Image (cartoon, rainbow, N blue to C red; front, side, top):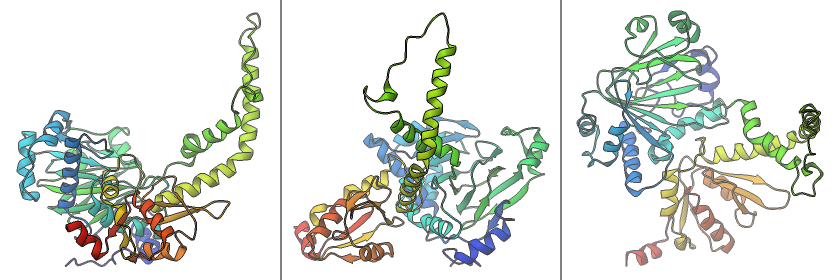
Length: 441
C-alpha cells in the first residue's frame, strides 16, 4: 500500500495551500513523493498504449497518438517502423525491455509517446482523476492537458537539456528510479550563454543543477521556462502532463477574430464590402490602393471591436464545456480510444432495463441556446447533441456525472438521447439480462 502524506485525489486544501507553499507560488520545481497510487497509473498501462498504436498501424487507422524511437540523442524513424510491425513481446515490462533492445539493436533506448490519453483508457481515467483535482483546485488550462510518455533506459533525455514552455507535472511510474535535473532560466543562461538546448556531454552542468530522485508514484511539478533533463541507468517509465495555457492573443488570432472578420466581410457580390476593387491608376501608383485598404481595414476593425465581446463569450462557453466534457484532456482528432468506445456501443441494446454509466473521466456538459434546446457534449463531441429537458433532464445528467449507473426507464425520448450519446464514445452500456441472453444465443 502506498505510504503518502497527500490525499488521493489531492483536495482543495492541497491546491490552495500545500501546492503553492512548496512551489513558491507555483514558480519553482518540487517533488511530491508517493502522491500517485499504483492503481491510478503504472508502466504496463503505457505499454498497453504502445500496443494500441501498433494495432492502429496494422489496421491503417489515422490516429493522433504517435511514437518516436531514439538511440542516444538520434531520432530513429527507421527503427520505429520495425517497432510498429515486429511480433509483439510477451506481457510485462520485463519482456518489453529485451524486445525493444532487439528492435533498436542497442542496449539503451528511448521511446516517446504523445497523446497517450487517446490510446490508454486506463491512463485517461487514472491520471484524469489527478487532472480533475488540478482543475477543481487550481483552474482549467484553456488548451487542456496531454500525456507524453518517456520509456527507456536512456542515459539522458533525447532532447538534451531543454526548456519547458508550459507548467507540467512529471508522473513517475517506475519500475525503477529516474534522476532529474532542473535549472532556472536565468541560471541556465548564465551557465551556457543562451537558451539553446545542450546536447552531448553536459556532466559539468548537472553539478550545478537542482537534483530530484523520482521513484514510482512521485510527481514532479515543473514550472514553465525551467530547463531540465532526465537520466537513468535502468528501464523506467514517466508520463509528462503539460498544461496548455494558450495565450489569449493566440486564441483571438486563431479562432475568434477570423470568425468576426469573416462575418463582417459580407457574403456574395451584392454585399457592399464585396464590391470589386477599382482599376488602379498606374500614374498614381500603389499609394491610392494602400490608402483604400487602410480605410476599409479601419472600418472593419472598428466594427469587429464592437462584436468581439459576443464572439469571445460564445467561444469561451464552447471551449469550457468541451474541455470539461473531455475530462480536461485536449481535444484532438484521431482519438483511437474514443472511436473504439463508440464502435463498442450497440444502440440496439439501448432498451428499458439496460444500464448506462459514463466512461471515466468524461462528463456530460451542456450549452443552452435561445430556445428550450440544449447542446449536450460528452467526451468533447462537438458541437454537441441537441436535446431538450424531456429527453435528458438535469437530474439524470447530475447522476451520470457523479458516476452513477442509470437504469433506463421506458421513455422513448430518453432512449433516443442515449443512442445519440453513445456515438460520442463516452458511455458504457450494460444490456438488460434478457438482451444479454439473446446476444449469447
